[in-house]
Each structure stands twice: as structure tokens, then as C-alpha cells.
Length: 407
Image (cartoon, rainbow, N blue to C red; front, side):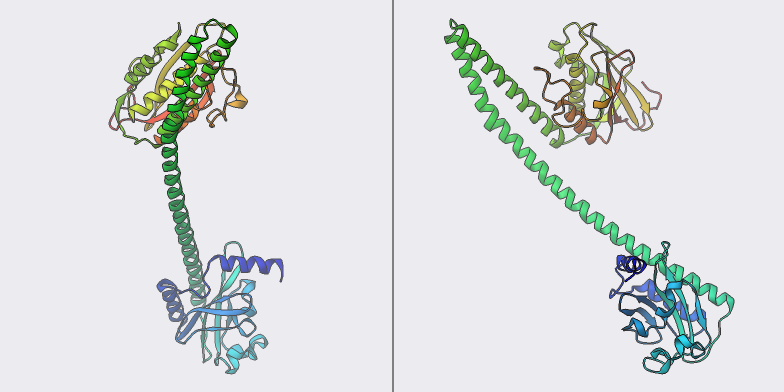
């Protein structure tokens, strides 16, 4: 088998037409073809490795026959319209069993090849009669048109099948995602009860032990190290719980003032400000969002700006927003140490850390931010701040009916 034939057969089988019901539309096209040609019989033939499959016919009972017996198989791969007023006049057809009476007594014969845009011949639209017959140029052109209609119906059926398969895959993926989210919620519950609670007990005993060993410097140092480890583990558990809740808690959209949410986030971060200057642009807009999640998002972003401040300048954080069509693009810009350009594409990955120094978090905060923005149908990105630092921009839907120029 040649490479071209393998490619042709692959194209034919991709349509999944063989041995399948033709459907009303294809049957109608074949009936119209017979009418256009002015003959009582027509067929839609598909040619596979070994046979001719008459997918649908009019004027006679169709069926399968060996490929070597097929009249259409003789020249269909050339992609040319074939027409004989009397097939007995051509040596290629004179001894064919469709002409000699084995299958039929074909005299008039015409076929329009079914060739895909990629050049693969699938078969033909064939009209014939047991009497000699002639076609006009206009009839030939209309039969060619009908062959193109058949190919379009083939493609539409193939696309509909692919869409159905994609829908089924998506349904399965959604079911798996729901199952995964349920498991994550269950994991969060286990973490909060089976890990956090015992850890609190350990922390309590370490505190008591530290008090009792107050006079032993070496032992006190060990206890202090253990307590710091417990604190770090507790922080990691809290971060993981926050991440899980950001992806699974109900997302309730309602109008909320961005300025109000920034002020609430700053209230939560008051202890971390430590001389930092936070500038909140005036007239910040209303957002269509889940206020709890956006407050958490702002707290994470501003908290990062405060944590990664530059050692040689006063920390300055700016919160602003600009309208971009149906969304607001909110920016949190700082003048801190910044993020290297080659690391900005990975900072939203779970547990990704640019600076692994102690006390610099667990690499979960920006993953949580990504999750919150995804749930709002937005996008989030990191760029540099002119003069040094990091600018994080995320988008959130604007409240319907609010003028685009509002700040």
C-alpha cells in the first residue's frame, strides 16, 4: 500500500461514514442528483481498502461490492468528472460486472468525485441508467456542485462528532475537577483538625517547657528552635488552608468599593506597615466581585510588598486602577527588591519561591492570588516598577452601568 493510499484511507475513516446511516440530508442530495441528471438511479459510493460501499441510493437497492468490481473505483482517484453516454464504449468499463449484467446493465454512467480539500478522494456521487443517455454542460456542473455539498455535509458531521466528543471530555474533566475540589476541601478539614490542633498542643507544651528551663541557656535555645519550627509549620498550614478556601469557597459576586477593600486589607496589615508609605489613589471604582476574596487578594499583594521591601529606601506601595473595557485593571506597585525578569513567569506556581531566606513565606500566597483572579475570570501578571520594584496587575469585572471614565 502506498503512502498516498494510506493517507486517503485515514481521511476516509476519519469521517466514520462507512456502515453508518446516511441520514436524511445525504439521501436528499442523492435524489436531487438523479433528478438533475434526468435518470432514475443514483448512488453515493465510498471506496475503502477492499470494497465499494453504497452509503445511500435512489432507484435501486444498494449494498457493498468488491472494490475491483466498482466502476467508480476505476478513475475516482484522479479527481475528475467521468461521463459516458454508453459505458460499453470504454474498454475500462465494457467488461465490468455492473455493465455486463452481473450486478446491473449500466449504459449511461457519470460520476463526480468526492475529493477533500486536502486532496484525498473518498468516493463519488454516481448517476447511471440502463439506457444510453447524455448530459448537458449545465447538468455536469450541477452534479459537481452536489458533490461539494456532500463533502460539506461530511465535514459538518465530522465536526459535530468532534464537538460531542469534546463536550463529553469536558464533562468528564469537570466531574474530575469537582471530585478533586471535594477531596481538597476534605483535605483542608483534615489539616485543620488533625494537624493544626495537635500542633497547637505541641506549641503549648514547648512554651511550658521553655518556662521551666529558663535557667538552662542551651536547653532554652533548643526549645526556642522547636517553637520557631512549630510556628513555621502552623503558618504553612494556614497558607494551605487559605489556598484551598480560595478555590473552593462559594464565590458570591456583588458590587464592592475597591477603596473600601484596600482599607480593610490595610487594617489587617497594620502591624506589618512598620514605617511603610501606602498611597491609595483617590476615587477607586466599584468592582463586581466577591469582596472577601478580593480583600484577601489585596492583603496578599500589599503584604508581599511590605515583606520584600528594599533595605536602602523607605517602602512605598501604591494601589491604583484603570478601566479596560468591561474590566478594571488593579495595580499594586512597590519600590522593593523586585523580581528578576526570568522568574516572573513562575511566581504564581504553587510553592515557587524567589528568595528562600527564612521568614520569607512558603510560596503559596501568589498561587492563592492566581486562584482568586481565575475565579473572577480575570488575569494577573507581574512587571517591574519604574525605578525599581514590583508591580502586580490583576483584572476584575466592572459593575454594569458604571461609566468607563469613573475612577
